[in-house]
Length: 278
Image (cartoon, rainbow, N blue to C red):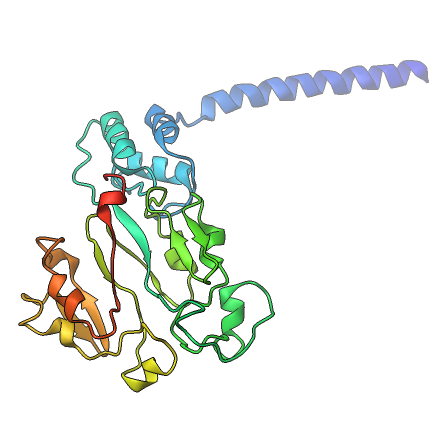
């Protein structure tokens, strides 16, 4: 009996070695050789896996660049330095890269915007919206629960005591994760070199806005008038002014009249002198 068991063990062990060796040989024969450039590009990427490039993570982006699915400058988080390294790996030109930064298009904090209820549920903006569109008087404004902060992989967003998210523009990579996370669509990516944006997304008009917010846009259209802002750099989309940054040739002066003429001072002027150069 002992002999039979020993023989069986030896036979099974031998078969295991044979099959193992066969699988090892087959894996080498059938293996698809991976393009070395994929690994090189992965090493150049920041590893944030933010998805801003449209790929499922940095690995997917690296494979997509080599396959021609994504541009060499498609990594928003990496910026121009990463684009230059990837372009060198691919033997091409990185092209022009426009750095973008997230801005919060709402100034309705605890001091300027009324609240119509007290919310004590889950600290999530989408969850708050399920209950009568949230507790804030303005149904278009920031809910102040920090869903955008939670998704930022670069520690570029923080909640201020006043109840609004604040962007650390030096840390912001323009990946767009916060834009996707905001259910009110109040976060926008704008060109880094553009100092002016509208700090409001309200679709209401006049008295309705003033009843809930001291600094909301009332949709008067003054900023879009030809004698205030030329060449349709600002147009009206319903009651909301829209800045067409592609038409702004001199960011420091072209929108100055619009900022000055706004009766509710709803435009925000970023101080680019304090920001890191793109």
